[in-house]
Image (cartoon, rainbow, N blue to C red; front, side, top):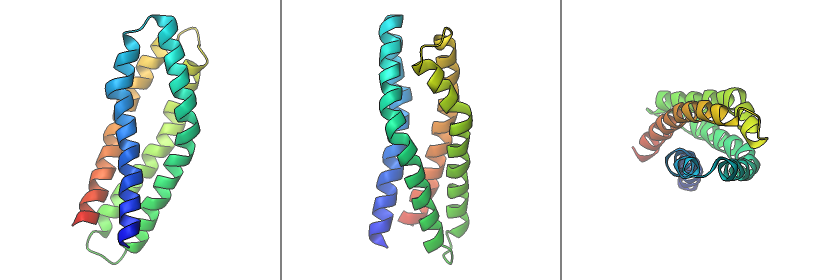
Length: 143
């Protein structure tokens, strides 16, 4: 069980950290570039993360479900279920509300700067939700 806890926390917390670093460091760095360079950077970032995230999110979700399964008869069950629900809903919302915008920016749509600003605002909401789910998970596992 300890190994599952460590793996789950590592996968989930690093994903949240990467999402945070995109918002806190990569996007502000991109905004300081000329528009053509900014678009190239954002397109490259979308390409790289677009390869990793479709694997990382489902693996994280699976690990959340495994934690909920193992913790079903523990006092932290309700918090685990809440964390898993937040994680799943955020993952689905990302596919519906963020991926299409990200694809438009990566493709260099005529209004890519406006679309990127919308994406960034929604991305911050995603980060908050993921951080809440990760915090609940960490609390249950550490407690």
